[in-house]
Length: 159
Image (tube, rainbow, N blue to C red):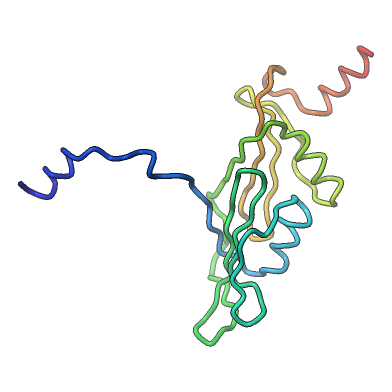
């Protein structure tokens, strides 16, 4: 039996795959940690710091993870790649309350985009220091394309 035929007949245990964790190469680890930890409230769950400097870490926010690693040359110097990082990358975190994430980020000095409703979800987003796009989304029954300021204004008028 050929390898291809054997693979076609095997049943894959789909519970074997547990989670997908985005892995971002970053050009300035302290700046990225300030954004994710201080600005968005992620915790540093794991880290690798061979010379006392964090070179890699896994961040956690609720049930979602994210990994960061700086770009290094063999001599240990940081080497951001040429070109723009983050182009085409958009990570969507599914939340119970994306508006709470938005308000927390604003309170911590981060400026996310104003939440709006798209695909029956409140959506708010940010761009990290390297250009990676991060979105937080949560289900809603508010009409499509409504912005948070429109929705809050309507509720103030009704009160």
